[in-house]
Image 1: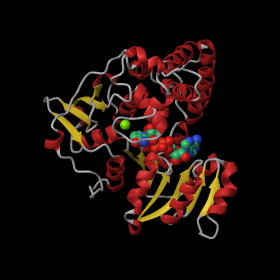
Image 2: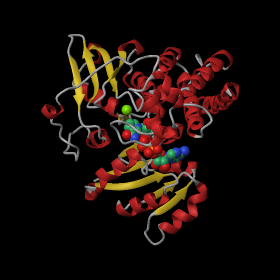
Image 3: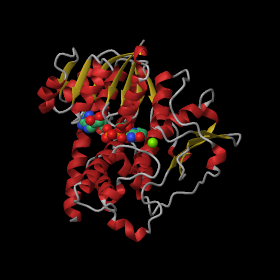
Image 4: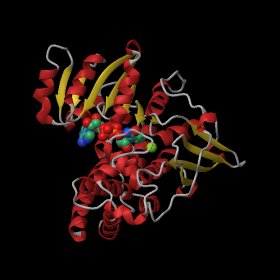
Length: 389
Ligand code: NAD
Ligand code: MG
């Protein structure tokens, strides 16, 4: 029996994990499930999976969640601190699948107890990569990547020597606007940006796929997790989203990971690692698929990639600034305050301003400095909005 906790259980990744666990309830002891506003889903899953604890991050929803779970024996808690407290509770396997910088605390807490962390929350590595990797080392914890590209790279590296790796290539679908005339991008609506050609994901990451801010985050995630030089990491546009990543070796070989666009693969791989186990995902018929296509990303269409490349070069707290500014720019686009194409402008303006004024490069990366710079970058992003307007 494996004890598991899922942070962000009501989200897109979280629900895929719940699905896998619900298929084999006798194999899992569910310690904690956390969610946000969708407390009906959280309560239903807590009962279905016989969870010990259900937590919503919204303290004002405590009584409602308590009422939903009355008489079930599931313990109820609410608020950000309750989420962190849940991460302190022992579990063999912790899935970090909250969206945004709020995922950092549970990730860090699980690692500080030497746990096995299945990491979907890429923001943890983008904002505080060196801190997390060091915590994993210090506490002999294990981090297993759950982003599909990083799970693919991780799998392609099994049994390999990192010294033989020349390049790491992560693929991108190109997102909702890959075929749009550039001139039309200025008028892209929220609804248009919220639809993905291949993957069914939460709204925020779907919009980040259209802008490739998601891929920019994944470049940084690759650098931090695998410890490779930024010059070795490439992005390849692959419309079919079947090849998730490739690793290039010094003998010219490329190891590609191919699979259906279904997060249950990456989650399931991390759940059963180091073994493989049968998973309920589609088996690909490559003869029927016929062709796979690859193209270089257009830097003018996807300025987020260039910004992320700069952020990797700057290092230090630049990742935390990049993430926070991106989160605010996305909030602004979702609220209708800026256009789709303005998000990149907001983010690069924040980075430029903060590089000049706030000393990102040589700052020490601690939980405190990351949270502090994150808050400051959000303020700077709101200032940038006013300057734009
Ligand atoms: P989502 O928006 O569908 O779900 C987010 C979850 O986090 C929900 O349970 C929500 O209640 C919770 N949450 C939101 N804000 C919170 C806060 N402030 N405090 C505590 N909990 C909060 O997101 P998602 O698409 O499942 O993505 C989750 C993470 O996984 C992200 O970091 C994303 O980049 C990464 N990821 C997602 C996919 C995908 O297929 N959706 C693929 C790869 C990586
Ligand atoms: Mg991904």
